[in-house]
Image (cartoon, rainbow, N blue to C red; front, side, top):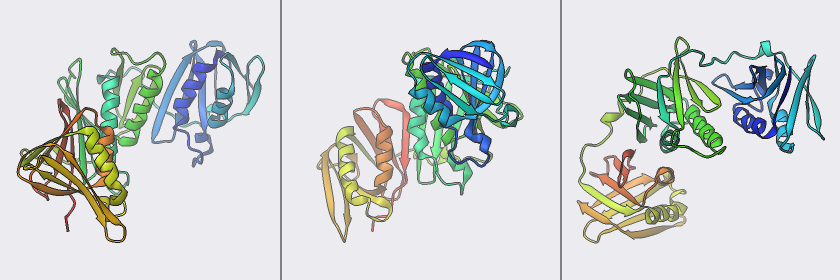
Length: 380
């Protein structure tokens, strides 16, 4: 193997593959990145056996070949180099990396020992999704997935597509987040995938990393492929393929959780509500369940957000808001409220609720594509 490539391109793609490399892998070779030089490209692959990533850069290939080298040390060395041409050459089992004024030698492991990571190959495109819309959807949904493995299906994001409609949903038993996306082109048949939330979050990072090179374009798309027979899905964005296993199991019938009516409705300024929640969390985070109490008062056109702890004290914040319907006092996890607010955009938040034991529905005014539901906490 003998390759010449640009330092900045190499560093950028190493940052992408490096996130899938464990510092203490079960297999030593999983700490390595797989390099393959052929067809005027240097291809890099990493995997943790759950997720896999392929990425490639244009390069001058003077001699083709494959090898694996320690990913983190290689990335740190490349990142420390100035933006200039990098020469990569394999001599027996040692890989030399040199520039005008720098050189390093890396011990290697045989490429044949590296776990196989499937590629897209000739698979047909399942669907093509606007990258910016998909990144936003992931950021609005993934946090609501469960983080423990006691119920594996809840650690995933349900992806549903039919016609030109695409929906991403996550639920952990206490909250639900749903985002709809409009596709440019209809899918040929109904699609249902259950993808680990971690994989989708990594995809959002890839979109962010890669779109930083030249900025996002409205024409940018993420192509989705189903790897038949492997129970895996692949996402291709620019020069990156991200491959993930699919989760087996039945995702909850989430549509039954979404309330169809309400007795109390409110419109509140996003910044004011966010600030009230931030302040009340100083006290709520010390209570059991991180409980914050919200009171909707249609008569005074106000919302009160409060929390109290016998050993510490309490806090109450009041904001003006449009409130219609019945008065309502309801408790929510302050952490859940904070997580939701960090994902919402827009000047005005809409709330719909029926009683203190019914789910609370939060939306962004003027944006029907997003919906978030939080189950209430018991008010003592």
